[in-house]
Image 1: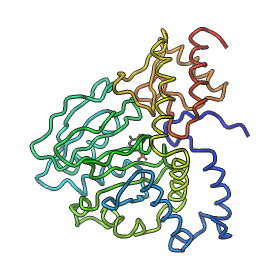
Image 2 (image 1 turned 120 degrees about the horizontal axis):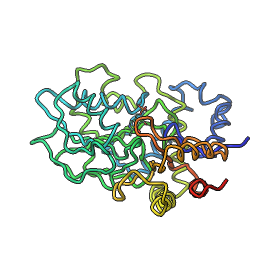
Image 3 (image 1 turned 180 degrees about the vertical axis):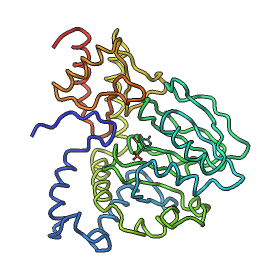
Image 4 (image 1 turned 30 degrees about the vertical axis):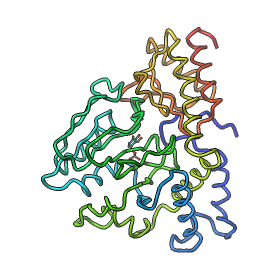
Length: 356
Ligand SMILES: Cc1ncc(COP(=O)(O)O)c(C=O)c1O
């Protein structure tokens, strides 16, 4: 079996050893004689999976007991609505940082629920995280998207805000040390750095959860997940298992600082190439460059088409940019191998110079 170099933005490449261990666990979880997909979520075997997954997340993320760890059976989009439903009450305003398509969608959902103030906007180019933020007089929370997957920009550090931060960390969670300070809630769809799609991880301050709305259906309230260990109904047991394995893998690699070093090294190889190239150009401004999603354009559409065709021939997959911005995008999350970025720049260089 020849595995391709997978530059997909998500679902995305996962550590190969996690996938191999999962193969075994499909038939037999931890020597129980029953596979992970077949175990009752109320049984002791899954209980141990849930426990060790949460413990690994706490250890790797440095997350204290003041925060709850929740597994929500839904993608990050679900939280675009769930956050304002829980925390944006009548007469209140929530501030949102608009750094691209994903924050735009979060803003759209929040506006269905209540009053939104846009604290900053990178429109129309979305090639940088805005430096100037203007807040409303008393925001209920301040929402930002730590990494804009489509435009390829990333907050180098969280915004400084006069209210608790809520962060969509879907595309850079656990790619660098987690900053919890000033954060009330962090949510992330799992399908980039953590595991499969259709499950999200939420890290939320317990006291903040208690301030949420009480008149919503139980599964629409974050506090239900906190009170019932994400087991109000049958959770995505396989998703929880894979997240646990991926986070344990991160721990074995040296944790989040080691991940950050490796991710910075990988991204630098590509950005350095783009900076010296005459035909390829990065989209994001240097101070806002994403370490996870590198977006770039060729001098002509033909060059981009040639590159994509050559990439497929050489087993480099998933490099086409998002349909809304075009160009190319290399998503190089935690599990993406270092030698993969070398192969990418070799190919870009070959195409630039008409070789191969
Ligand atoms: C930053 C960000 N937020 C939200 C989402 C939406 O995630 P989902 O499709 O799991 O709802 C994505 C998906 O790629 C994303 O990159």
